[in-house]
Length: 107
Image (cartoon, rainbow, N blue to C red; front, side, top):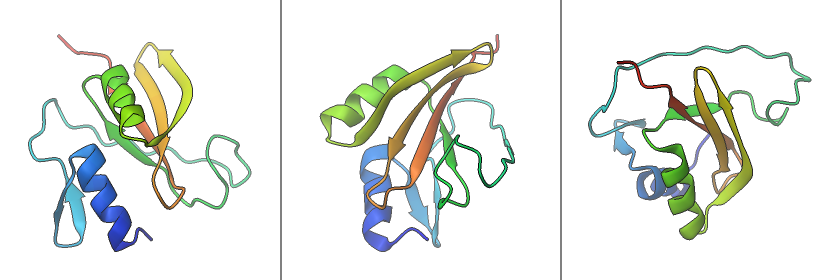
């Protein structure tokens, strides 16, 4: 469970707005998507102690990750690109791995 100090971190670094115990982006910039991905418990994609991965969509992955590096956030140097978008990862202060996804622009 994310603690209060960590909530402030999400507000500061990822511009999430806290409302009634949950977070939201202040204004969506693209069509919303909901993605569910299920993994085996021993899958190496994210830490086994972490029950679920937070995946947030961003408009400019490289720009966001570079800004977070400048702000002292732990950023995984690995970045991946696929036909459906680009991915990067950060860690919040509690050690939760957070995935950032820049979907491919749909014209």
